[in-house]
Image (cartoon, rainbow, N blue to C red; front, top):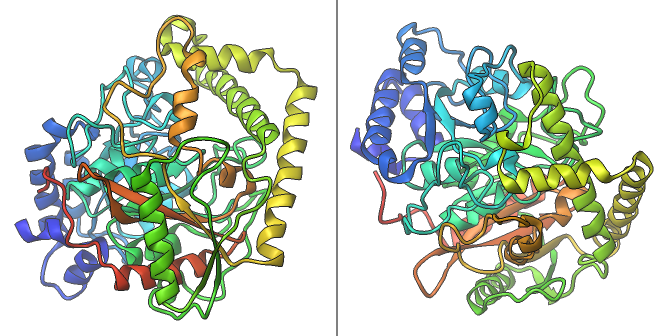
Length: 478
């Protein structure tokens, strides 16, 4: 059973199909790993071991592609009927909030055969790219316990990187799948807007920056995970174009000769030489695989007006979230209930008028059209670093103090490459192709045209075969 920590979710599901392991054995082994290691990591903040044991004990698990595979759900907006949901907030934790209904995605995880072992740590409302909420304390990176695992899906990424479960749910509103995947040495795929339903609780036209999927150690896992999660639900306002075939079938498929642009700096932010070298190495690797690679990127990718519009929508959504949770709990959320940065963003969001909000949406739409033209006219993929430097020490990133917004520039400087593609809605993947001088993982980001996850999966699987990362494991590992 110890060897299960070395297997991805696809391999574990195959053991169940061949009757070489039972779902109960997989679940018990994962529980043992969590109990052994999570005191060091603080990744799984709300275990549900009894519920998982009950699910496999009934022997009526859905016959999905991941039947019996242990899974973890990120504690952010993924409503699971009868289970706690805090979004990293002390307010919801102290209120003992329990989700009254399933999200479509939580239902699909069950239908896929996953067995949920618990909920992973997230920063409050997912607002920063590190996972250090006051509600639960910091999650530690298994590569270096003094470092951040990234965020906002830091709990999920730390857990998978340490081998607690082979795969976990994650979500991405400004890089929150890709950033921690880079920090923890995982594959993290952000799907196209409208590929995975945010319903029925989430608003497609209001929370359009955020998408959901997951993280794993292998490309084949995230491709098969996308097959489970993808597809419209009744009432969805945004629906991505249907794929030509199952995403799992794209793994190993030849992508043809692609044109790839490469960019290693954006917006005047400094990129660490290790991240630049990792990205340039990935470019050379793509060339060796037959692709054309040249320095290029959309002219307006670092447009300041888009950044201002992004933050206007981001902060307005934070303010709206507090109104939502206050209504659901039955009392107003006050400054004393949330972290200083959350309150600062909420207060800023409340100052914006409806006209300013609509103007921000128009700015983002115009930006999206300009960026999409680059893919339409010239290139198939854009290659960048995922983050601008290695994961920083815990305590360095979350702005605190009397004026946390004044320190927000440190956040932006860490993650200049990811938020633009939450605006455009394009699919992007982080792949663990590099290592910093300190031995910490570094990811590269590949971005495809809207709706073209198939291209990303084909190229990602090419790179995985050419430069395998499966044997790399952090010092803290099951």
